[in-house]
Length: 310
Image 1 (tube, rainbow, N blue to C red):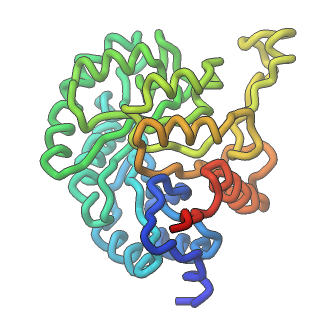
Image 2: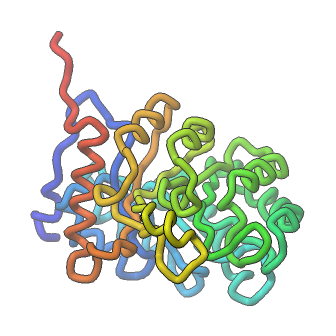
Image 3: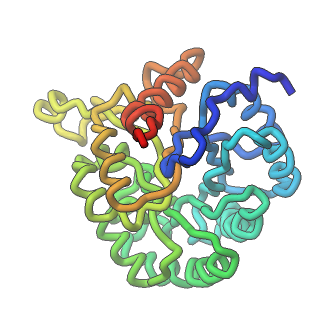
């Protein structure tokens, strides 16, 4: 291993920051190699994500390779993610459902206790019609996870869906969250929250987070810029974009307030940057934007720890 890859800031003796700042990494045989290349930038955690399926992925081998790269750094794997529709019954949906089981069973191999993803939904029917299927699928998954000390966190992207129609994910509305958590009242199920998806729905994320912070297990570091001039002139149903997903530091959210609310609620976990969405900081500027976001979020967290005088 290149020694530079481990050139990350050392932890201050006697203090372990309860809120880490990291980034998302795709789950594959190349995961450890990718992490090794970006480790020196100062990421403190990595969320390893899979799209729709873990089929063909040797989770045990990936975990061993990742742990080898992270050994001695203090950097952690915050979560495993499986993003598909586990409530429908198409072939890929069934693979996603099996992927939740595999990730729950494999979480300990990565020394993490969170598995996250879309909640799924029945396709093109109102969200409330999916709640019985949500209970059928996730009540046993929550029990399986609880037995292994694992928490389940639901990401909030609408994936182009509405209350009445759509695919992928019912967990994009606070009204749906209420129904989900009533249907499966398990302490180990919660939210993978981010301000971006709230702002796309024209929700103010700050009062929402104050209400729901105790149910937030993991945070995606993704922001948004709302074009209020477009909304005032053309509304939200026209052909002109009214909002852009942004990398933190380039959007509208007050991340100092977000982190303050998380600290006051007792949140201990990671804010992992979800890149690959920014309309400017992408392609050759992708890592430039992510490292800026990393430094920005650390500054919003309060900067480097400074011990009190004795």
